[in-house]
Image 1 (cartoon, rainbow, N blue to C red):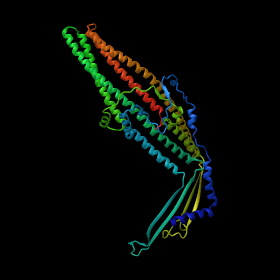
Image 2: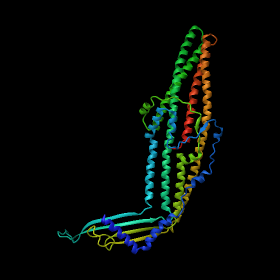
Image 3: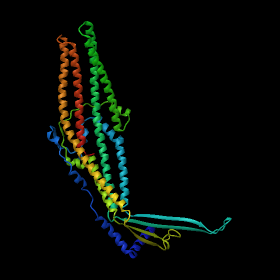
Image 4: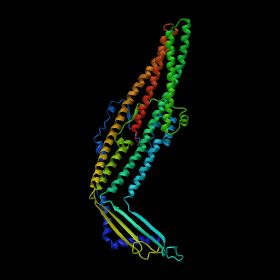
Length: 492
């Protein structure tokens, strides 16, 4: 501790009494560099002015919109409103094990390291150079003498270097990396948003598929009974070969549909497992039992465009990319101007090194060197870098505008999709009820001798088709509702 105190005390005295002008300049330069340029935070606002943020479908919607603040500290995740324990456990498993989310986190770690490295360029560097060696002299042709002269040498040197960021090149590069870090942090949240949305959608597709599987199994059993009954009526002369062929055809069609749904179930399980980052065995265990299909309420959170612009992760990420591109353009422009650097060396001995027994500090020598560099030739490369940065800024503008349009389009489509899919579901539920009643009535009329069995078969076929369509419509309504919630609840 005494050695380092003596060392830095002598550096200060050396700079104060022998290099007063350079010391004064080194104090003024940071103040000068802080006044050069303004952070380009207004880039995203300028880009957003060219985007129409109205939602036409909102005016035509029959939903009951409510002010729900998903950004509040006590707000619950949107999927918990479905009150499904299996779904909640599946989402938790996904957030912990998803490979896509883990990849986004790894990229965030890289951005953190990059931002830290660029920030370090703004500060001075201090290097310590130490050497120790042994040399021998008086060599003869036959080899080394037994009493050869040997000399022990030691040296140590401190070098302090700093580049004054007069025109803000390093400052803008550091700011660009910091903003890119924020963009990558938003991409982590967006990966969570997208993956969880897909998980919930596929979960309810799986629930729908299993519901249709149960319906199809019942249909297969009923159609098998119809075939047996037709065969008996054919023997008794009350049915025809045409009736028998129709009954057989419906049974075969039901069995084919059953196999198709079993394939769809396995496919969905594997897709969910891939999204959740787990294997097929584990996902089948987790989803051995699932909840039921639900009918979403007519109320939904009112979309807030201002909140979406500020907090929706994917839009926030491209907005940060836009600001980073503006910082990089500023840095490219600053490269055209001179750079000023300082170097301080301190050591012992006339050569600026410390020789002799360490840590003796009998004599200290040092020097301060100021370096001013101005690009004269080769400016074409710097101008080309400016053109490239300007082109990347324009690309960032277009990407931001395109993403904003996509977000608004997705939201507008989700709004109208909820309304229309609800209408489709309600009508198909009514159709399913009528078809079921017609099937039961046809059986009663057949028993009363007022209807042939062909009409019974056709009524049963219509019933199965209507019930399947109702389940599919309910699935579409849930998926539309999930898509909307995932789009309008930006906070993660």
